[in-house]
Image (tube, rainbow, N blue to C red; front, side, top):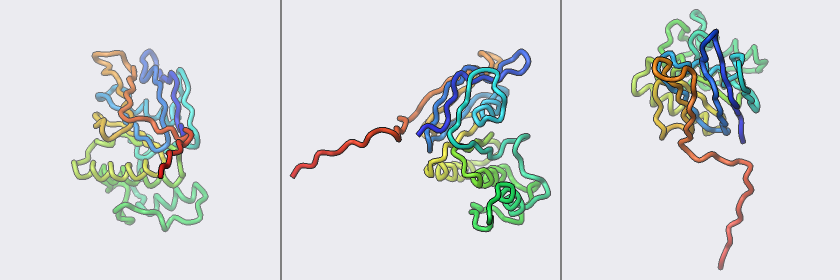
Length: 219
C-alpha cells in the first residue's frame, strides 16, 4: 500500500530552491534515505515529505499521518524533562490513557533531555513519534554524532519499525543502498543545481494490492 506520494514537490526560499522536482512513491514498511552534502537541503526535503514545510511547487500526499522523530531545531527534547516525562506529556496530548507500557529501548526514564546523547535523542524521538501510530516516521541526521555501534543499534530499531508496516524516512550524509529501499540524493549546491533531487530504488516495490497467484498442486 502506498503511504506517501510526492509529485514535483519543491520548496523555495527567496531566490534559491531548497528542494525541487521531487517525485517519490513510498510503500508501507519501506525505508527511504535522503542524502547529500551539508547545505544540500536534506532537512528541508525531509520536512517537505512529512508535510511540515509549505510547498512552493508540486504536491505531497500521505495516507494516514506522518510523525517527526528527532529533527534538530524542529523536534527536540525539552532540556529539563526526563525521558518518562516526555512520554507522559506526549501521551496526554494525544489523549492516550496510559504511557507506562511504552518500550524505552534501553533509555533511562530518569535521564533529562539536556543529558541525552545524540543516539539517545534519536531513540527518544522514535518513541515519541510512535505514540501517534503514524504511517510515516521522519528522522533527521541519523549518522550525526553516533559511533558505529550506535548506528547499528538505531538501524536495528528502525528496521523493527519498518517491519511493522510504518514507512521510515531518514536523512544522512551517506546511505548504504543495501540497507534502504530508496535513496533520494540532492545535488551539491556548490557544484550542481540547488535542490535537484535524484531518486534511486534499490529494492523491488511491494505490491500489496496485487492479486495472489494460486500455485498448481500436482499429486
